[in-house]
Length: 467
Image (cartoon, rainbow, N blue to C red; front, side, top):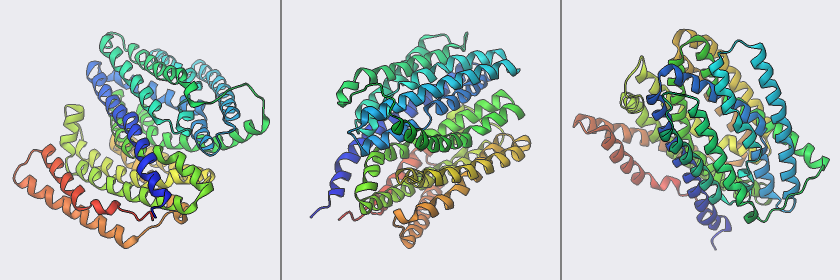
């Protein structure tokens, strides 16, 4: 008899992953291409200011969210009956935190000597904080109504792109954050209009238990998210101080590329998050099975992505930047190493949240972020962009053994199978790449054929016995 878990793999996860691919991968690709369009339309100094302002506001939005999206989705997935109290607690927490953050932001502007144009851009981008208070995507996530999330994110990015094409951003860079804000509002308003389809009710309540529990659980999550964001964007802040706005813009595009690729795995892990959360209470064996499959999938995806970026650094540089720059080949090879470690780390970090080990994940992220900052301070002044990437790799690499140690009992690792797969898959890709380069095959065709052969030969690696 086929296990119920297997049926869920065939239905819910496949369906949810498909819609998360739409909302994650397609949106990330469109956002990445939009960023390239903006970088080529305005001058490099202005683009650096845009990257700086959007990075600062990303911290503020993350803080105002306060980890409530992850907490709310997890709790609603486990307990649909008290959704009204959960929604109430989340909205109160978000509004309160946002109010405090706006006060602190204006105090910062008053006491700092930051350039006026950057202040203007930050204020425009910060409107997203108000919109994010009422963003309801986490409720749809908990209810596994992923279709609506996909449409809202797609709507947001399409509206943004349309406005950027219509508005003359080369004459006034303020149009860039304005287009972004209108796009974000469009997506949020779409979710608000369809809220009744979730069969959720809302009423204002001062239930102290739900407020306190939501605040404490979200606090652990938001601190983890902030540290994770710090890992990615500390390089931007340090490069702003030690280097030029042009280099800041280059680093911003590279981080966007990383987020685009990580989005492939993020689509899958977001789709299984509600199901994994419910399994933690109902079936530990099912949780172990789904985590084991997830780790295999991460490794299966990480190897070809990292290998191809490592093998064609100059080609990727020219494709993205339309030119090469100092040490660009080495920088892209370093990014390939970071992506490999990050893609393997993803299922472990998500697993710690699912199993209510947020405190352990927080400690790991503190260690990882501190190491990233220390190496950034030492390496960025002398190595610039390359130093920022090296610091990123070291911080991510430190997190892997710590996360695995905390999560190992919720995943099955067949070490011999994994090591064989890593060795033979890399060997196969190396041989194929050598042969295609010998015959001077165009690099994109090289990647396409090599990837097709890789997927065919190693397709059985993803087969897991769910019986």
